[in-house]
Image (cartoon, rainbow, N blue to C red):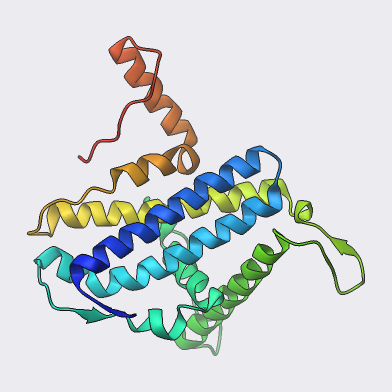
Length: 236
């Protein structure tokens, strides 16, 4: 089904991101336990869920802000919903905005001599497509023992732990970025009632920004004179 009301789409979107955030926390637990391959596999699955959530968000962002109730179709759910590469590719393209989102603007890739901007965009798209295909392969490697092209044995533990940790943190930050954008939309652009996603943001923060999370928790404990429990997220 790709046609839905804004109310249903909102519940679907939040369910997708809730699942993505839980997959990320599960991946983090697996990484801590030394299960690198499975941690990577769950990270890729989380990014695929993010890809679907982005398709829904792009179609319904305006309706959620304006409070309209007309059903809409999310065509890419029907045409690409079964494509692991397409879902992951959507997440990669959205994630390319991460550095600029936090004010760290990367150097812009410009056309080489004799190239057009279309050539640059095509090259970037090709790199993203290759990354999506590689991630899908990583996901499979995370669950199975197999043979490589030379006849060698490949196991889920062969993925480097540091690379898995880096990919996991970036995935957490990209999901968090969409949640923050939605928070900003509701605060500044929407005429509808605020619909919190704070629980998901709070779930991601120990992975997306571990130092800031630890510092915040300690500051609240110091303020309250309490060494037990953790503070709750706020929606301001």
